[in-house]
Length: 122
Length: 148
Image (cartoon, rainbow over all chains, first blue to last red; front, side, top):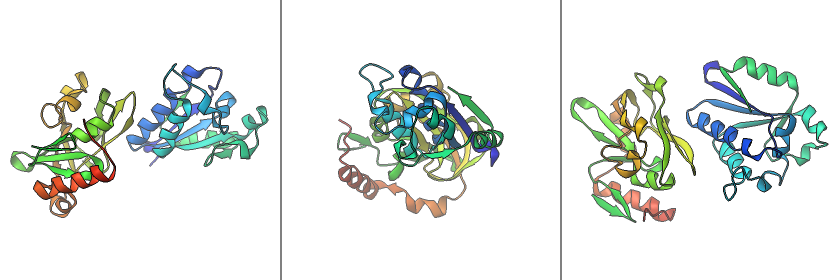
């Protein structure tokens, strides 16, 4: 049902650690509410999906790394999509991405957005 | 009330052990439901929110599906329904003080009241009485969970 789909577009990345926990938390929460959740990563957000990167980013000093928030979201069943153009922006190869992340073009983002009741951008 | 590995587990509740939730019969075939002391412990001990999805009120939620959500700094996840049923009402006190679900999980901190829709078939999935407490204890031991 289209009513049960939501999307979070993630543009924030390693330069703004404090913006990198809540989007994953909200995604996990939506999954817990039984929404079908997609996170679409573009601009600097894609860098968070680079293997080894999220472990080094801490939204709060002494707190959990972004990788833990990512793992919570993946465990909750959130689908991760990386924008192909943004991987090129950062000279990333498909093999640089975390396991389970799919690469899609911008047109996919538009199609998913059309199916979703709510789209949030961070 | 049994104390299992530091977790208080009343003997008169039906438990969906896998999901750490309980159900208690009230009058008129209605069941009150909530989280166990084990769920309270696993959530990290201090809640930011415990929210019953408004859309669920008046609707049927299936057993083990998300009835509410629980948020803490350590954890975010669903509160699954211990039984299939129509959600009659949510505990409004939790909006003001979600930590009632931690401090008094079987009393003031109940989550919702439900009218079962498939109790006869589902009661077999729930742990009850001394045998039920033993089953819950086995799970806590297998997963090395304690509440103390």
